[in-house]
Amino acid sequence: MKSCLVAAIVVLTSVTTFAELPKDVPGAIPLWSQGAPGSESRASEAEEFVGENCGNVHKPTLTPYVPAREKATGTAVIICPGGGHSKLCLGHEGYAMAEWFRDRGIAAFVLKYRLAREKGSTYTIQEHAMADTRRVLRLIRSRAAEWHIKTDRVGILGFSAGGELAAYAAMKHDAGQKNSADVIEQQSCRPDFQALIYPGSSGSFTVEAGMPPVFIAAGINDRLDISEGMASLYLKYKAAKVPAELHLFANAGHGFGYRHNAKPSAAARWPERFTEWLSDSGLLTEVETKLP
Image (cartoon, rainbow, N blue to C red; front, side):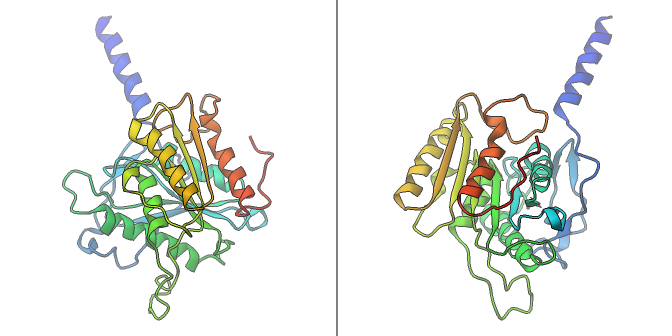
């Protein structure tokens, strides 16, 4: 009897820990058709999954969640999942969020970027993960007409480690290489807005006038460098006169992400606050408000 109880607990724990990804995930699109610079020799390696978490990414991709043309608002959001740069949490910080945006007329693109802190990794955040982040901004703009997107409404949203990438993309960008033979590289990699959801490494974030407007959300029960770091970061944006909005949720910690079946709470409804901010900022029109 005791052994059966132990077995049941093990099974229940594994089900709880290793949530599964949705079955209807759209096909992924490689960021580089010939392989990402610095990863060409490993592009054929398969990604590795444990539940909803992905690793061994050597062929960075975007997964498009594009609304029907008649529902499209013209706004696009790149989603950078978290995972400490050692994995990608594609469930509550990836595909679930993308579905929510798509159902409200916002094109969403889940980025699989290379992992700088995965065991045995030879990648770095600034050279490889950021190359993937800037490339996806360019790629989406190069196909904006196809996906019914306005090229001046392409933003980036990141969770935790992905929030670092979003912040760095807003800090350093360029207008593209207009003479490049690669049409993607001709496009700007400047995000038109940024959303930082409990990002790490806020001490490395710099702020200056002219940066993209920012939406920040975190839990007051998160690590001190994140909860207090977000308050300090907001003040830096205010001082630089960059439009910013901050939400520090009283009953949330790290990793709340987005789950369609989450227990009702202020933190669980942060995506609604984000779309309201987009509307208030002139970055979103005709957003669908009748959906739950």
